[in-house]
Length: 480
Ligand code: BES
Ligand code: MN
Ligand code: ZN
Image (tube, rainbow, N blue to C red; front, side, top):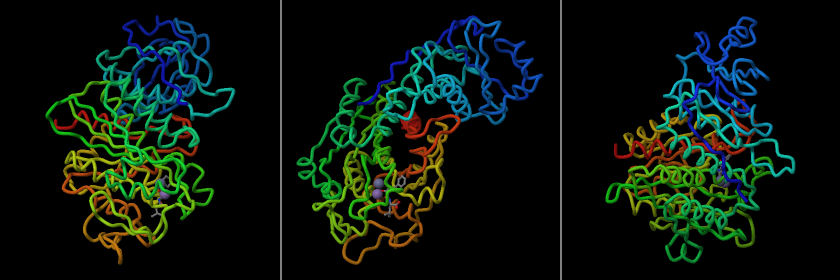
């Protein structure tokens, strides 16, 4: 069902000009002297104006002289002053997109500086992955082999782990909902745990009922596919604190009885991107054997309308005993996360959740930036710093008591919608906050960045793998 990432990634000390490869990708800085392979060629291309090295510019050269590789691809890195993990990652990804539109054996990359090995190496794999199309004639080919030149060999394990994790997350998001549903997602989680060295426990519907997960089960009750909850446990620091990661895993969001129109429903296979990020992030942490403990909780349901579906006006009791008035069945993410967060908060006091929760967050911040909401400014800032270090983007939204009214209900402890048009992302955050007890918690609303409607220079359309790299940074920074 999911394609696996089987590209062999290696580091080589050989001089770039001598590397035998189908393609040799070389980054060029704007307005900087060039000292890499084929320097004469670069000088001529600059002279003629064909190579300006502005960020993401691509200049392929077939049958070049002066290098052993069969083809050369220059990629613009922009000015070094503006360079970051994100810009170098994007440049490598853009180069990979050009190269991998046809079959390629060996793809060699000259890392612009050894300190940029992670950005360049992971970016290259990011761009080499397609949108998961089921066409008989594929349009994207992962290379057989990636050779990183001028690279820091110490970064190779992290390049491999993050590349594999990004690949897994995007495969999961891109998989059609006929293939990926709560049970098959849980199987994918168990498979990943077995292969990468973390424990996975799966709860079925009867266990979920026994565990009093009434809010999560209410969302699932309209669907033919039963709910699952997957608990991922990685112990790299026995006896130490635990980082709790909770993911929204709605494998298809029709809206339920509050049915979405076709335009709003068409991409709702992406509504499990939070759970995909958590699974992939834990996989990377486990493969890197980081000195940290992680508990991942994946809340897996389908949100469907039917004769058994949860109704408007229904009142649910969540695991922590709080009651919820359902006023819109399309605000289902917070209902499943309520129980998942309450469960996670029983095991650790430091939580982050990842959820494609609200269209309102996209209205506020656009498609590239996640909304960050927290009940603890220091913890929220630490999470934000990890996201930024990873080259990803988030922005803090206010969560003070002036927003408490957004979730007030006449008949229950809270209602599941804000009731009006305003502050929809914060209403979601305020709702989730009711389930974290005394834990320090941050909520990342990834509705914008999780999914790309169209292709960009750096990435094919579809699942983006957002927050996978951020989770690795969170784990590296945890307790440090
Ligand atoms: N999964 C959606 C949010 C979403 C929208 C994700 C677009 C990605 C792209 C979520 O379950 C939803 O439907 N939210 C509602 C909440 C509302 C009913 C309070 C929304 O955003 O309209
Ligand atoms: Mn919804
Ligand atoms: Zn949803």
